[in-house]
Image (tube, rainbow, N blue to C red; front, side, top):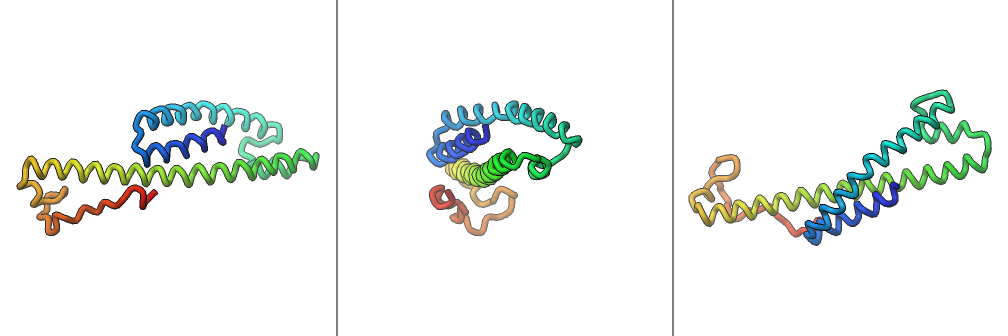
Length: 147
């Protein structure tokens, strides 16, 4: 399940960079489905924890309690894979958040530019209502640079 989630999050980054809104909507819909899947995994985890007499054991603690060495090694390998997936997902989510933030800055700049053409006197003030000393400073950089 988490491998599929990672793939969707990578596709989301590509959609954000390319500006494919329709694909982005579909990806967000698929990502939302993972909420119920992670709830199911949480329920299974609670059942496994109850076998060991605790509700809040970490996977590492469960591995330490497994007596069969081959099973412990197999689960340890899966734990490492899951840990790496979680880190990749977290990193990609941060990148996607930065891309969305950048897109919002570009959108704000575009709206401000259009408003300044329609109402030129508005360009003398910034979004806080203070006198604008440098109206040419946009603070917007290339999407490719930030991606």
